Length: 261
Ligand SMILES: NC(=O)c1ccc[n+]([C@@H]2O[C@H](COP(=O)([O-])OP(=O)(O)OC[C@H]3O[C@@H](n4cnc5c(N)ncnc54)[C@H](OP(=O)(O)O)[C@@H]3O)[C@@H](O)[C@H]2O)c1
Image 1 (cartoon, helix red, strand yellow):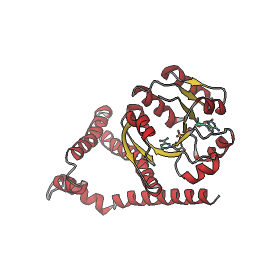
Image 2 (cartoon, protein in one colour):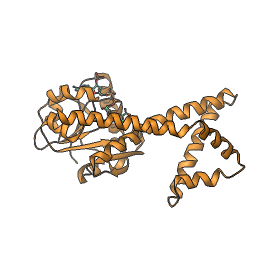
Image 3 (cartoon, protein in one colour):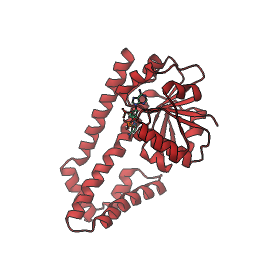
């Protein structure tokens, strides 16, 4: 196993590191020192080393995970000298291979998208392009989704945003039932159970479309159908489509701007 370096120890990359260690990755993990409290706590609990600066991380590692925010990438790129032996794995949304190449001077770049569930080894791990080495590295984090085309990667990023939106839907549903007087802990369990039942059954019935599974429950005269009528009246799902469209649009604009630089 090869040493990996993390450039940008933040909310996402700390979950990735925890998931890698939980999944049995035992080679050295080197962390950039900025955000020192978070880096030191990760180093202490998950057997990593915080190095003196970004270049020290680059020098000690062959695979480099990029975890800064998009507007911090340019300054990160200026702080390091990447060589031909390095493989970059970028978690940064809206930054194309071409822009990574311009900033870091290497075409050994892989884009990846995953969620906080990396920490529990149960995230989708989108990889573009799929590579044997990174597939093997991230295999323990969850379900690998190899994506050959970069434009499809932007769509996968929209799907990753849905993960965040679901929490707000869960929040509103939880608040409604708790406001009606249901014990908050029990109502949380009801909401999560309802969602996980849906996921478990949809996984069991891979042969059925989501629409058909829904229709098999919301049959005429059921309370599910009654509620669905109200959701349709409010065009609830149209709002989700609009959210997807605006995010895709923003991602494509951002990547195209980056490509033109
Ligand atoms: N959070 C998610 O759910 C999620 C999901 C998918 C993809 N992503 C992508 O992951 C990236 C990181 O998101 P995040 O939420 O984890 O952000 P974050 O918590 O802000 O983490 C970024 C980290 O990088 C550090 N940093 C900034 N500039 C640096 C530099 N020059 N050298 C070394 N470290 C530097 C930041 O330090 P400071 O705090 O001092 O600035 C911070 O600790 C984003 O590009 C985002 O598109 C995030």
